[in-house]
Image 1 (tube, rainbow, N blue to C red):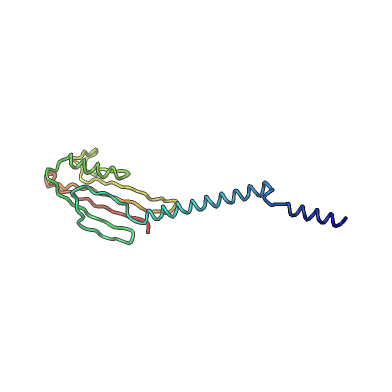
Image 2 (spheres, rainbow, N blue to C red; image 1 turned 90 degrees about the vertical axis):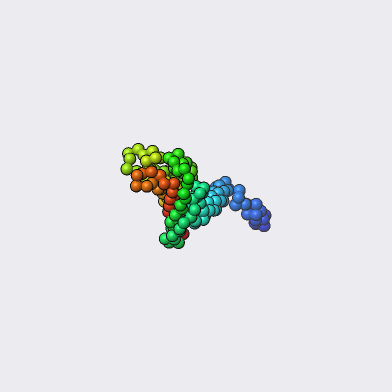
Amino acid sequence: MSNVRTSNTVEQIERYNCLDSWIIRITLGLLVLIGVVTLISAFVYIDARNDRSQPIRLRHYPGLQLISEEKISDTQRTQRYEGVFAGMSPSLVADIEAFYLEQMDSCIRLSEQTEPTPEQFHTNVCQKDRSHELLGFTQFTRVEIKPIRDENGILTGEVVVITNDQWQG
């Protein structure tokens, strides 16, 4: 009889599968889910970090040429673009402003006037910021648009655009 009991016990042990327990199945499922979410999160983080490892690419207004570039550090630079436009008018200044505004987050006009119009402002400053404080990413561009005026305040046709870039190293 003891042989029968032993063989029944062995049969029961052989038939027992750890996956038969619903607690173990749920635990394994959660572990697999956590692993998948961790891998996806790591991929997204690395992709976002790599995307911010260079300056934001901007299109510059047609007719502007790069005059100088100063590398301040490995992750910061300043570029100066200039252009001379025949028939410079407030509407052309507004076109240049709109061209950069469509690529930026915001633009403000700096002038001595309270509510400057395109014919009154002296500098337009635009900024695009893709930084993420929580994750420690830095990437932004600041653009200054300066239509040059003569001593009487008349537009000369010359426009200077200065970009300041900073990005993640």
